[in-house]
Image 1 (cartoon, rainbow, N blue to C red):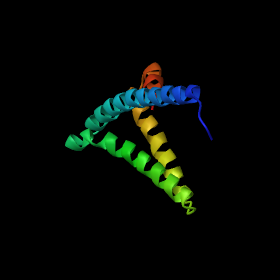
Image 2: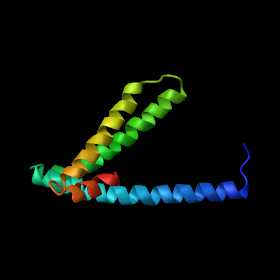
Image 3: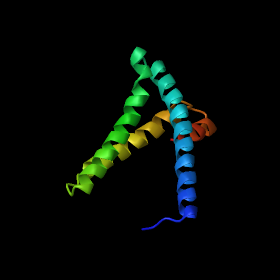
Image 4: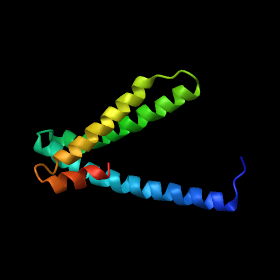
Length: 110
């Protein structure tokens, strides 16, 4: 497939926008989940806990993509990544509990 100049520009805009949205989402999610983990008694581990969840999602999806690419699909990897994503959203929402608007605001970006 040949990309025109317009295609390349659009791809650059999409990639840049996705990186910005991902950065904002990670920063907000990190702060919310870290504070929740501190409240729940995680101690110093609270500072790496949110990174561990997000890194796990990325690694599981990358491994799923790699295994699918070499024709050894293992759907449980993708489902586990989805479960971790849902867990992250729940943790973000719980950080603002019991305020319903706050729960929605914390849960929407992740």
